Image 1: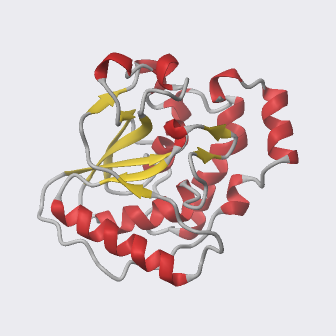
Image 2: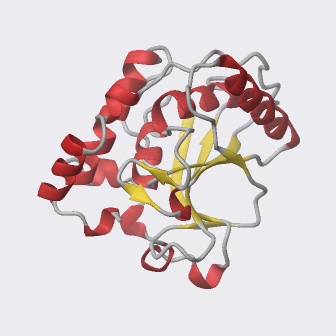
Length: 222
């Protein structure tokens, strides 16, 4: 949906239908299970609605060396933005995050994801975007990530922080397909885009407010 919204329509949706992103930020509990990761850069994949905002937030996290927007869950033949946005390919918009666990661990990335990036109670939608391509999902790439993610989702469900059921899924990776070049580093390249201004700038502000020790002001291009 985001590719078709005018500035006026986006602002109307924000005012009439949804709370601003910053108001929806929720400080998720600190993970009880800390990720035990070896030295060296690691990769993780997150689906949290429009990949512009997911990429934008993670690109401001210390220890993240790369954040690449792309698709997961469908075939390579249909892994194109204009095709995926039709909502019938099985893909989710995702971001592949490369990070240094000596600076930021996987469990800390999960906490940021649930606090700032995605509303885990929205099924097949985020903000103004609807469809299975905007589902929230964690895609563990290692057994340790799978165990940490599973434990954290169970912890969040028991925490009572969210009044509605948590519907974020865990999915196995088939293949990651990078999105087209114009969708990479989108927030940095298009800071005044109406969608970014309406929905995603506030998420970066929330990152800085809730996780000041992990926030970095510069955007890491990926």
